[in-house]
Image 1 (cartoon, rainbow, N blue to C red):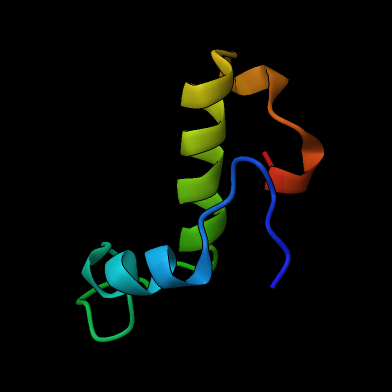
Image 2 (image 1 turned 120 degrees about the horizontal axis):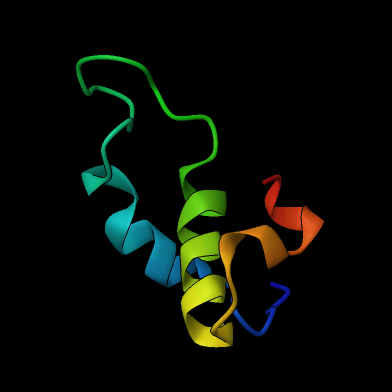
Length: 60
């Protein structure tokens, strides 16, 4: 397992992945990258940066 500074560990992700909107089994569209979005929000919050300054690895 590779740990990045602002990334969720696999065990943390497993605890929340099924309760996020857009998960499999939810009515409507299934989200493609819930984990990437959650990690982008955490990165932005922890780094104290605006959305436009997120690294490209988040796809925004």
